[in-house]
Image 1 (cartoon, helix red, strand yellow):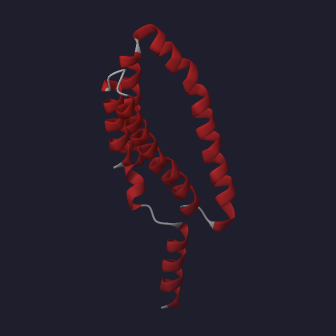
Image 2 (cartoon, one colour; image 1 turned 180 degrees about the horizontal axis):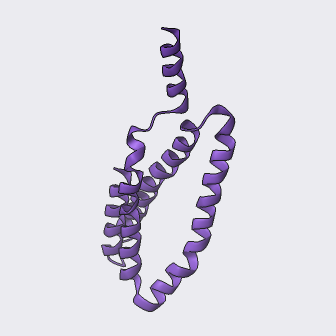
Image 3 (cartoon, one colour; image 1 turned 90 degrees about the vertical axis):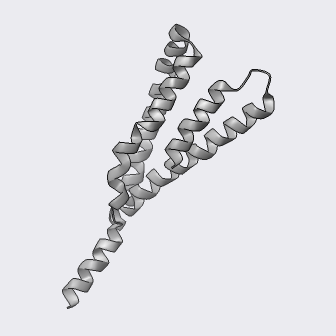
Length: 126
């Protein structure tokens, strides 16, 4: 849901007229609101899927990947805008917001590490 909302918000922002400051504000707000969900959920999954002793390492690795991705996005996106214009920029960002949907689909049925431990404990006590 969040990633589809992000793609729609990006597409809307790309089509807002230059002088429509209120619509621009709403589109940027929608982009930010849609970005928060996946950012929070990836961190939550990183904490819930691993064991208690590995949460720090898991969150650190996810943070490293996020910072690396943010650092590496600047030059390619700036080059894209310079060579192909803002339309290409918004098309690429919209595609990048839809691409993770099939990649993250496997996490829908993932269980928290603590849930698996509880199930194992119940089975062993029978």
